[in-house]
Image 1 (cartoon, rainbow, N blue to C red):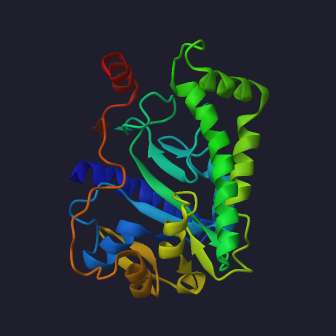
Image 2: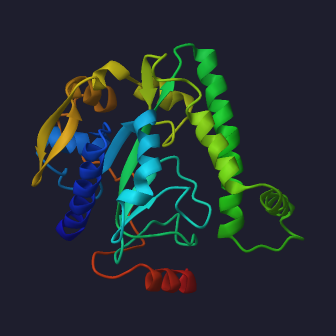
Amino acid sequence: MKHIWNVQMNLLKKLLEVCEKHNLRIWASSGTLLGAVRHGGYIPWDDDIDMVMMRDDYNKLLSIASAEFKAPYFFQCAYTETVPYHRGHAQLRMDGTTAILPTDYKLDFHHGIFIDIFVFDAVPEDDKEVTRLIDNIHYWKGKVMQFVSSSRFSFNPIHDLKLLRRLIYCHTHDFIECYRKYEDALSTYSIADNTYVVKLGLRYDHEYVVKKKLNKNLYAKTIYMPFEDTQMPVPEEYDEVLTVLYGDYMNPNREPTYHGGYLAIDTEKTYEPYLQELRRTM
């Protein structure tokens, strides 16, 4: 685990360096924020780093990523991959390493060890508007996933007409155009004009939005806390943020990781041979 953490800390320092250079706001999120506050670093059983940015700063990061992240760093998003990439957030990965998730081993994108860069998008206070927002996001995420499905599976068109229709859709539409419409749906509401934000690109069901939305003013000021051997940016109002997310957050409660484990993880070997073996045996 500590070898994995070392790679992730390298990625984190590079990301923070780039954000500082371009005056982009970024904060520890979820278990990483909890780790910074409660442990001064990783939660002992955690296996990743989660960061979050407001949509405007995230978009600026996307625009400079190709110039700022050179090998061995790979900034991964829908616009930097050569195959359909479906996540609603970016990941910074390390060349020459392996971190293959169970859901991803049939997809031909970069599978190096990574840290997550999530996005805060605004959500309205009116419940009916929230429902309409979720429906729109669901529609466009479904279109994005059609491209992913068509690249992930082999099929017999006689027995799978539904997948055949997906393939026809993918051959008559452009993935990047479709993904942009998905991101447009995520960012329907302006953060400047609304009070609450949530990581819609991670999850967008109604219960999650209602329970996990955060007042954007909790992120008005940034402070730094020790995190392993570096300083981690966190919202000054971290106590209220963590209370919304976890309740009594100072009482340790071990939970499974969001990623659900890895099919293969290696800090010293690249992922391509692992992919070949997994596809041969699974």
